[in-house]
Image (cartoon, rainbow, N blue to C red; front, top):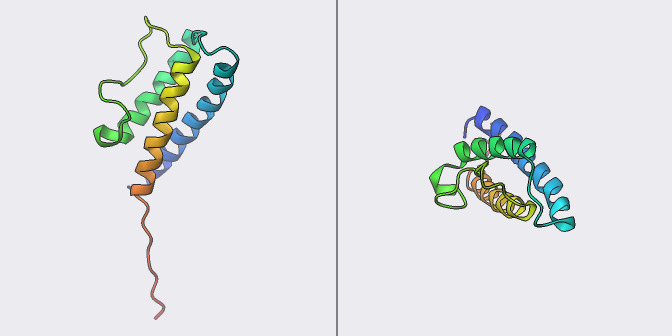
Length: 105
């Protein structure tokens, strides 16, 4: 990964984890309540950015890209999807860790 990809990855991962924590709290309280359209807009924006980084090889589910606005997801739906995205982003991160050996000369 290039530096700009790593920076973008870090930002998206942080945003997904933040939303996962926030929606997770709502999910514990009211798992079947619907996400409002305001939040859904930002959730889908983050998912679209994550999809662009993950590519087909790392995306958690074939056929899932974004939540549909006319089929508003519940708190628990969003929590489940974000958990899968967090896991897949971690897999991408670990697959791209490299170390450089420095030789003292």
